[in-house]
Amino acid sequence: DTGVSQNPRHKITKRGQNVTFRCDPISEHNRLYWYRQTLGQGPEFLTYFQNEAQLEKSRLLSDRFSAERPKGSFSTLEIQRTEQGDSAMYLCASSLAGGMHEQYFGPGTRLTVT
Amino acid sequence: AQSVTQLGSHVSVSEGALVLLRCNYSSSVPPYLFWYVQYPNQGLQLLLKYTTGATLVKGINGFEAEFKKSETSFHLTKPSAHMSDAAEYFCAVSDQGYSTLTFGKGTMLLVSP
Image (cartoon, rainbow over all chains, first blue to last red):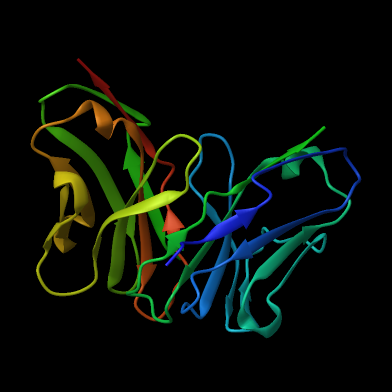
């Protein structure tokens, strides 16, 4: 068990550019979650997948955001036409199905939009 | 809708003193409750969780928390603080038919020698 990994760890981009982040979950976990954490706040839910199906999206996930999980393995989160307000830590987590199972978090990708 | 309130954005204790971090939740259905810890530049690590059964839950690193339904609380305690406990702590709630977590804003624990 190598844990949840995320790449890149840091991303600096200019406003208006597109960025893509990758998350590799723990191999036997069928659920994968994306959260966003801004300074001084707790993580906020963005979206989650069960296998390859995207089951829920938060209101926070504007149409500039898209997430995929092809084949139910790794996931990507893309932000198009980045804005300064998108600067945050993007956290990925994975778990077994069922609310009682804890979510295991990756180290996050810190996005800075200049 | 669920929500979590963590009282105190910062808590300072001396090494060896009792640690008490407060968490109150709001949920329309029986909740699952979690405490996570985040060290600088690291992801969140689960300290403990309450799902069903015993309301006093023991976690890693000597932490424990008690689920009090009547008070809608899930406060985190540790009898004796260590310097290594300095970190940010997050309380989170999910409901039994759901899986996404709703987090509080976090409490930064500062431990002085």
